[in-house]
Length: 58
Image (cartoon, rainbow, N blue to C red):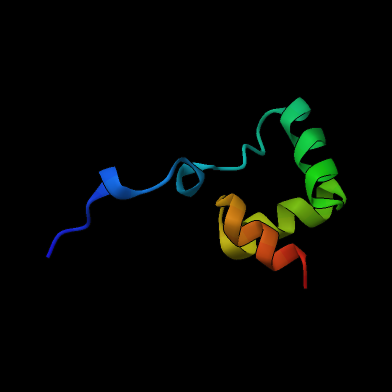
């Protein structure tokens, strides 16, 4: 059975961009973390907003 990409919600596609300084500031505010914490989290779980939110909420 193949995975149907059309059935994913837009939230599934939300990726955190850590190459744009302004977006880093916005994501850090959203996650309530420092830039260092955000970068470490991306290295640990990838760029998915959902995965990062779960990781940083621990």
